[in-house]
Length: 273
Ligand code: DGL
Image (cartoon, rainbow, N blue to C red; front, side):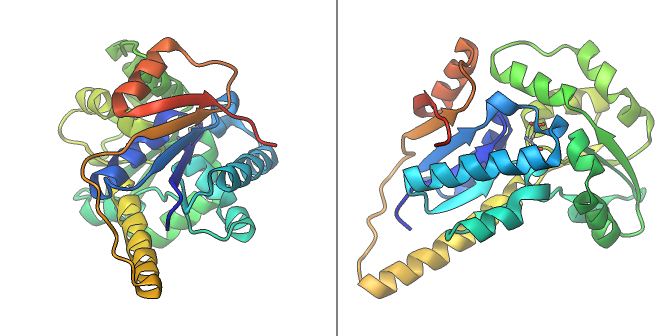
C-alpha cells in the first residue's frame, strides 16, 4: 500500500476517526476529504447523497492514487458502501454505530442512538438494532443541529449549555444509561455532551473499531508487499504532514486554523471531474 489513506466525511466529523487511526498508524500518509458544499448529509435525499459521494470519492481516489478509503460518516455509510465497493478496487471501510457494544454494557437495558435524521430513518440502522440491540429498549434521536454546532466549534466558536439543552433535553429525560454517538461529528462535542448529560450516561462511538479495521487491512497489505518484493519497509518516526480537501467555495479562517493545528499543511478546495 503506497498511496495515502483517504478519510472522507461531509464535514469535520471524520476528524474524530482520523485522529484514532493516526494514533495507531502514525507513519501512514493521510488525506482528509470533506464535502462541506453539501453538508448536512442527514438532510439530503438518498439518490442525491449516493450520486454525489460516488462522483467525488471515485474521482479523488484516482487523483490521489489512494490505497484505502475510510467513509468516516455514518450517514453516507448507511447508503454508499456497496456502490463504492463495486466501483473501486481498493478497500473501502465504513462506520457502523456502536449499538452492539452499547447493548453489551447497558445495565438498565435502555440505550439511546444519537445520529443524523438520515441515519435514524434508514433500514440499515433498524436492522442493526434488530440484530445487535439485545433485549434493550432503544431510543432514537436525530439531529442536524448538533452537526452544525460541531462545525461551529471547529471554526472556533463557543458552544453554550443553552444550545445543548435545546437539542439534548429529551435524551436527558429518557433515563437511558448508554448513548451511542452515531454520527462522527458528535465525538467532537463529547466534552459538552458529557457535561450536559452527566456521569450516569456512558457515551460510545466507533472510532476505535474503525482504526482497528484499517490497521488490520494495512498490515495484511504490507505483509503481502514485503513478501512479494522482499523489500524492508523503512519506518519513519513522527507524524506526517497531511492534506485537507473541501468542496465548498470557502471555509472560515477559524476552521483553517483548527485544521492547521491538527497537522494539515495543505488545505485546498477540490471538485469532482
Ligand atoms: N458526520 C456525518 C455522520 O457521521 C454526517 C453529518 C451530516 O452531514 O449530516 O453521519
